[in-house]
Amino acid sequence: EDQVTQSPEALRLQEGESSSLNCSYTVSGLRGLFWYRQDPGKGPEFLFTLYSAGEEKEKERLKATLTKKESFLHITAPKPEDSATYLCAVQRGSQGNLIFGKGTKLSVKP
Amino acid sequence: DAGVIQSPRHEVTEMGQEVTLRCKPISGHNSLFWYRQTMMRGLELLIYFNNNVPIDDSGMPEDRFSAKMPNASFSTLKIQPSEPRDSAVYFCASSFGTSGEQFFGPGTRLTVL
Image (tube, rainbow over the protein chains, first blue to last red):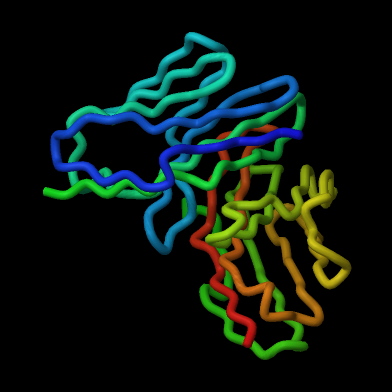
């Protein structure tokens, strides 16, 4: 069965304290792995797509990496505005639908 | 572009009543997705359409739930009769083709008393 597990469930950081979020997945025929950000009271917002092991993508203080079994979202010198829930999702085969993990809620204190 | 539009934003109803949620996807997108989000189960896909045709409805909980997409610019998700366990935030999302880059609406927070 396809499965996406994110850890930790919640993470509290001080401003400037770098860390990583983990997304472990089990899926047959991975087509792509996606990271989304969700702010309270809003819908998820797309951040990155990763297609193959070894691939990396960067956006401001965020960098996403992918291996054959997991993906990491590295946050360098985070700011309070980075506080949000980060969701990981996988897509398999030719299907359009995504399977989401339950997310990591990140809080960055000034 | 206005993005994905959902209505209503909040809905409070009583058990047994019919609930209809509405969605207008981004113009030009030909895939539309309905999701449900709860604390316990996270974000779950209910159904998705491609070119107005339902492709995968395996996530629809039971016969009380139904979804339609009569044209490329409008979709509805109906719950009849509603139950308290249906309380959740329902999101609509759209994308171009089978791209995993989906654009989500603001959601409808449904409370069934």
